[in-house]
Image (cartoon, rainbow, N blue to C red; front, top):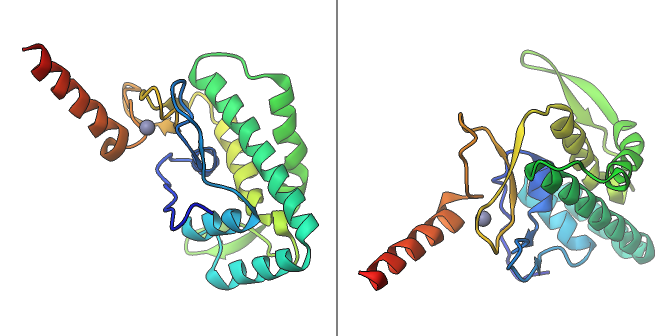
Length: 203
Ligand SMILES: [Zn+2]
C-alpha cells in the first residue's frame, strides 16, 4: 500500500470517504490510487475506526489463508466504490445516475443488510453490523448502507471539490450549499495561494 498513507475522513458520509480513497479524481488530475490490495481495505477501515485492530488482524489472517478470495473481494470493493463514485458525481453535477451503477449498489445491498442488527444504546437502540468471522467483505457492508442512506436522503446535496485535479466528493451541509472544497486545509488553501500568486504576478 501507499506507505504510511493517512486516509481522510472528511466527506461527511462514509461512502464518500470510501470514494475519496483515490486522490486526484478531478478532470485534470492523474488518479492516485490508495487502495492497492485487500490489506489496504483493512487499513482504511481501521483508520476510520470501523473495525478494531484485533478484528483487522483476524481479517488479514483470513485473507492470507484465502488469497484468491481476498483478491476477489478486493476487486468487488473497488467496483462498488466506482459505482458509488459515478452515481454521486452524477448527482453532484445535477445529472441522472446510470441505471447500471444504481444496480451495482443494489446488488451489494442484500448481503450487507442481512448482517444488520439492533443493539441497546444510551438512548434507545443503534444499528450495528454483526461480526461474521470469515466475512472478508464485511468492510464494505457499512459503505453500502451509507450509500443507500445518502441516496435516500436526497435532497442532501453532494458536492464535488472545485479543484480541477482533486474531484473529491462530500456532503454539502452548508446553508447555501456553498462548500467548495473537500478540505480547506488542502484544496481550499492551495486555491487561495494560487489566487494570491496570480494577483501578485499581474500587479
Ligand atoms: Zn479537494
